[in-house]
Structure formats: C-alpha cells, structure tokens
Image (tube, rainbow, N blue to C red; front, top):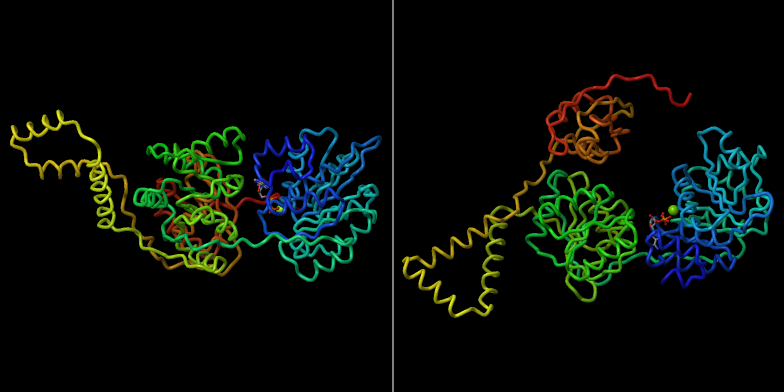
Length: 534
Ligand code: ADP
Ligand code: MG
C-alpha cells in the first residue's frame, strides 16, 4: 500500500518521498492508521520490518505545535545508545518539513549537563534508554506530565537487558491518559504482562512470517574464500547468463566496490543504495526493467522499495545479516511460475549459517563444487557453438557469400580449420577463471577473553574496511569472529584486537596472507595506557 492512503499529512509524505520509501511495509500499513486513531498497539515484528516508521510517522503527526513552554509530548524508550540515536535521527528525518519539533536523545555513559541543557531549552520528543531516562525523572531534570504518547521499542531486548523495573517506574511518571505502543520481536510472558498492566485494550498486530512461495527456486551454495568471491560471481554470471539478476552485499561500500569492478569489466551492472536520491534510483530501476542493465547490486535496505519481482537470479554475495533477509532476497526470483536460481557464496566459517537458512526456509540449499577447468571450457564452447548456430538463422547476402566462398577456394583454405580458429578466437576472450575450493584449516582456538592489539600494514588508503580485516583473520587462522575484538582502521595501517593466548600463532599465519591483494605485515602493538572510563 502507498503511504498516501494511510492518513498522513503532506509534509510527512514529502519527507517519506525523500527517504525513497515506495510502499509501506506490512507493519507500517497495519499500525499507522490505528495509531493515528489513538488506539494502543502491541506489535510483534522481526527486525528490519520498518517498525521505526510504523510508530515514528504517526508520532510526528500527533505532535502539536507548542504554545508557550516546550514540553515533551512523546517518549520513546529503546534498549541501547546506538538504537536511541538511530531512532532520533529517523524521527528528525520524518519531521524535516515540519517546524517546531525537537528531539532530544538521552542515554547513559555521558555527562548529565549537556542533556539537562537540551531538555531545558525545550523539546517535543524524548528518545532514550530506560536507565538514564529514569535518572533524569528522579532528579526532576525531566518532566513528563504533558507526555501523551509512550513507545516501548524493542521491548524484549530491553527486558533482556534487565530494564523491566526501570520501565515500570518510568511509566508511573507519565499521565494515564497516554497512548502506549509496544513493539517487540518476540512475545514472552513478561512482555504480555507489561502490555496487560500498562496498555488499554491494545490491538495485537503480528507481522506474518515470510515463507518461500512455490518451489521454483533452485538454491545453490558455493563455499569460497573471501578473496575469490568476485571470480565465483563472474563464473555464475558467465555460465548461467541471467537476464535479470540482483546481487546482494551487506554494506554500501561493498555495493559500490563490486559495482565499480563489474562495470570496469564491461558488465551491464548498476548499484542501488540508500544514499541515492529517489530520482536516481527511479532511473536505474527503469533501465533495469528495460533490460539496459542486467545486474543490480544492492543492500537489503535499499532493495526494500524495489518492485521488480521476476528476477531469474539472486546472488547472495554476502550472507544476509539476518536470516529473515535471506527469504526476502531469494523470494524475488522464481515468481509467477518462472524458474529462478538463488546462489549463495559463503566462506568455510559460515557453513553453519547455511544450515540455519535451510531450517528457516524448510528447503535444501545444494552445496556445489566450484566448476573445474573442464566444466568451464565445456560450457564456454557450448555457448560459442550455440551462438554460431543461431547465426545460421540470419539472412545472408548472396553476393557476400559468393565472395567469401571464392576467397576460400582461391586461397585453398580448409573450412574446418577456419571454423576452429574462429571458435578459439572467441574462446580467448573468456573471462572465467578457475577458482580453488578454500583450504580447510586447523582452526586456532582461544581459551581466554584477554586481548592484545596487533598492527596490520594496510589501512583506509588501501580501501580496507573492518570486514576485510575480520575475514582475513578468520580465514588465515580459522578463528571465530567473536574472538576478534575491536578493529580500528587508520590511513596506512589498522589495529585489531586478538586473543592473548594465541597471539604468536595468529601473527605468524597473518604474515603469510594478503588483504586486498596486498601482502601484509603484522606485528604486536605495544599496549597504551587506557584513558577511557575511570
Ligand atoms: P525495525 O525497527 O523493524 O528493525 P527499521 O525501522 O530500523 O526496522 O527499518 C529497517 C530499514 O528499512 C531502515 O533502514 C529503514 O530506513 C528502511 N525502511 C523502513 N520502511 C521502509 C519502506 N517502507 N520502504 C523502504 N525502506 C524502508
Ligand atoms: Mg527497530
């Protein structure tokens, strides 16, 4: 459904348009009109389903222009500082065309003074973590006596973090006439208790779990080392020749890099990501639908508004960060009875995730061996021959035919030899490379949580990102990514935290490896006195 039909006003619709959202998600469709109608909601929906806008848009709609002193009219509680900041930013984006809406974010770990100053200056919306919000309420540096809308976002997460009591205390500070919206990915008893204690006749809204429709999607998986992914992608494109394919990466940067790489190899590819203006996205989509671009490279978020569903191939270049995304991604091919292929690339460490994906989709992902030289050659020659055969249908010119045949006769050429030379010439243009399966290594295991820092001789000037470092470490050592600590990228080098007990083995293995095709040098970084958090 379009946002236009949900009862939102023009200024908000304009902001949504700027964000590039085309259609409302299920939870947005279901919630927005109900919230506007003042009813409480108990919403259950997985991450990534658009809950922020589901409550955020009607929340903005309900804020009244303050007359006199500006006091908070809405409070959003969220489990972490990051999420609070994220929600605040979204709310600011939603309200960019409306004057007189200020959002103040409140979280622990920083000074009270700045927050108190911001609250005192007056604001309409508070977003924050329960602990610090309660602190302010108890110190009376925050008053919620005119707050008439409370949102508990990611409620199950807040309870997991032990915020139940804080939340209950906070609610006591808010007038009973308020509207209360509660969102949670899961519905344990504790959430139901909060709902029944603090909500008034809430409407329960549940996002339907996505299921794979039909069985016209062939799911394939290739186990491949990170550094070989691009070659395996090209194998898939060259061997299967999809007319419309979507290639999913997890970050904008990856999308841009991969797109630049494919374009430089003359592949008709284009990127779509959240930073692009609506107009630019629409243009790319039109070219894709017309077949002027065959490969669309995108992130999950950017793909959400895209309304092309008859893809013949979906490629998971990166494994989806949420299992649920896998279903969204591959569900875009194999619709309307069309045959679709979903190809997933994964590295040896990610094998377990493939099993999880099979479980949630209740279907099989066939792990195939990477094609051998013989297999690749066979496919390429078949393609050349079939191209030539197709050319037999082209109407030929008698005069030219005579010329050619005369030439062959006069020069005494062998037609068979000519044909083979022609085919070989085509073959020499082949861009498919053979890729070796990743080596199974004896994984290093750590028994300590103690970390030391190492210095790696590549940095942002080598276009290295955090995920490159993580992949390189786990590929070289077999180390679980949860054993890798903080990673910081500097211009010419990077610093990574690794387990103390196996530091020497790790450094030794890393010194034999490459990142972004560059041989790296790795050494122990001397510990500096930490100034943080006294
Ligand atoms: P949740 O809170 O359910 O995990 P979010 O509200 O954080 O989900 O939304 C996930 C992502 O989807 C965000 O980047 C958001 O900008 C984007 N998004 C939300 N609604 C839409 C929509 N209707 N169309 C396109 N993208 C959307
Ligand atoms: Mg959320």
